[in-house]
Image: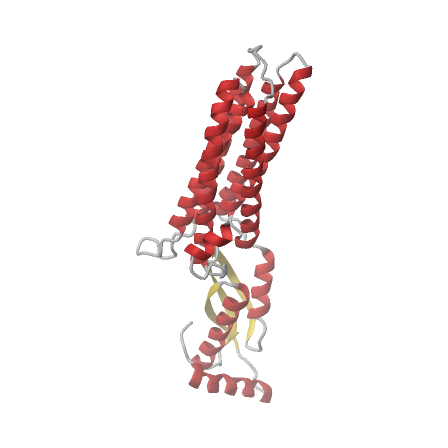
Length: 331
């Protein structure tokens, strides 16, 4: 279903390297999750209230929180697509992570409220029993959540989206918690203590923990955690893969949303190169880094030494001068 809708509503939907396409796919998956979670929440809430089941009611509110997660994911992808403006020259890509942080807070809040509700249920002695209607609703819920989980898991690995990750984790927990509810209601027939309330407590913990992890991870990103050292190593290899740059310092890389990474660096370059040759060299390096690493890197030249120009170096300089005649362009 998702592929059909993607093909119908998203132009060039297979080009996931395009940030615009990526965010549109996140929006579409979020829309599907919103609709399914609303249906599940209403169904479970009605059944839970009729059966007076803490775990089913908790699961219904968990689905409502999942709906909010999906709505926030939808809004986050929309806001992240806003182009750069005067106040935000690097665009609005970080809105995806800011919204993800709020999603984590919401999930933690719901988990805490579910915990309090389950504690209160221990005072009741009207135990819930399994029947056909309850079993049918819960099984259909599991099937719907399996679909949402598989869809968002595939998109998480394909698009590297924290928003899809949040929906995926919620769906996984819902599958496990709904299975726990079915098992607890079955066990209730054979015991005289409130298994339903215990299942509700476990569900609340299962909701809270991924919300906390999501909040922590996105907060670290927004604070400015170090980028993957492997990326720095790739940039280092490209910067030094020539006979004119002997070192570099002050390498700084900033991510402004998935697919929008900028950076800057100071390179130690020979001072006796012509401005044209130095510019051509730096432009080639910038293009290579953009192509191979995906980072737009601004390079500041520090003329720190005098290059001994032998025949090999002279030939390289002539090649750069010749290239500049036909391939001169700003990066």
